[in-house]
Image (cartoon, rainbow, N blue to C red; front, side):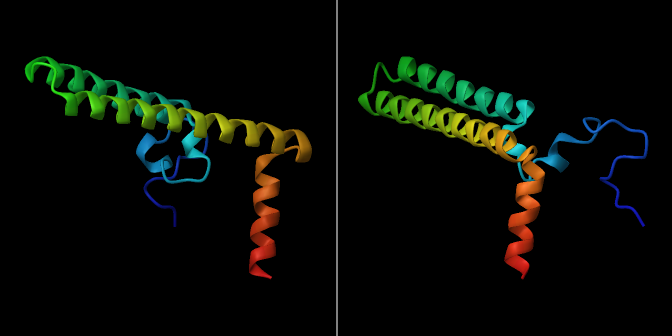
Length: 109
């Protein structure tokens, strides 16, 4: 019996729902997810700019803008490091999935 979120036989791997794939391993490198994260950070930054204007340049709003910018930069750095690790794993082993399967089988033994 198949579950409702599985793609039918002949469907492309990208035809599934974005939200059904978000909790799968490796989803943090999905381009749509990264675009969504960037849009969320950009929207938050725009809200802080509007708040800075409405509060006549309150220091606390600028501090929050700085914290948000640092968080955005740290997320971008972390994703870049994940991409580098993924590329080196593929180069060493031929595929990311084989390494994950080997590690999983070692854990169960």
